[in-house]
Length: 180
Ligand SMILES: NC(=O)c1ccc[n+]([C@@H]2O[C@H](COP(=O)([O-])OP(=O)(O)OC[C@H]3O[C@@H](n4cnc5c(N)ncnc54)[C@H](OP(=O)(O)O)[C@@H]3O)[C@@H](O)[C@H]2O)c1
Image (tube, rainbow, N blue to C red; front, side):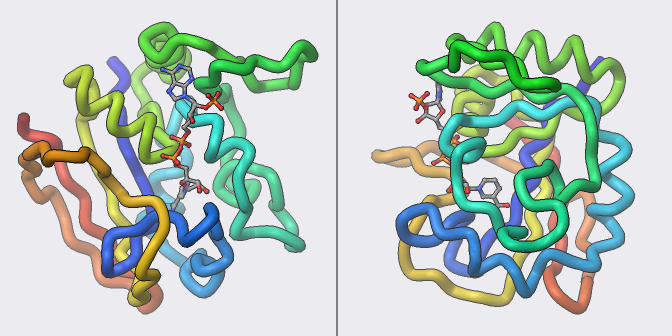
């Protein structure tokens, strides 16, 4: 049975994207990150929010631009959107309903991970009680503004159990299981 993982690079002040969706801040922290390299083949599908799908690419202008994990991963991608495009794109399924997209991504992942991309989609996984794990690559930078890892006006407590802490020269990884 697939597990649902929100893996993401985050600034020290809790942002996953900078102002206006800027992702160039991430360039110095793209790797090497051996734990992420080990994770990539364990990912069976991607569940992606439309803003992430359409958004800025930290690999812009480099090999791997426009590809998942900078070209390090290949497999079925499910993009959640209210605006599915008319034309088909190989490997990408656009779905206008979150629950259906998650079910399709889990089915496609088999016994591997569904990797969630996008804070809004991760929040919906949490609200549905479907997020199993969170992997934070904690980058030594502060952004001051942007898209938060988890934004819930009024607050919402999500308890996590730490599974591992891995130190890397560029970013430290914290891997959690979602408790409740
Ligand atoms: N730091 C990192 O490692 C990392 C990784 C990935 C992404 N990011 C960044 O994170 C930012 C995106 O996160 P986000 O939270 O703003 O957005 P997101 O989760 O990527 O996408 C949200 C969008 O998905 C669509 N959507 C969401 N729920 C839906 C539903 N139930 N039914 C139909 N459509 C639905 C809507 O778009 P429409 O209404 O337009 O269809 C919504 O605006 C981007 O800037 C991206 O670059 C950072």
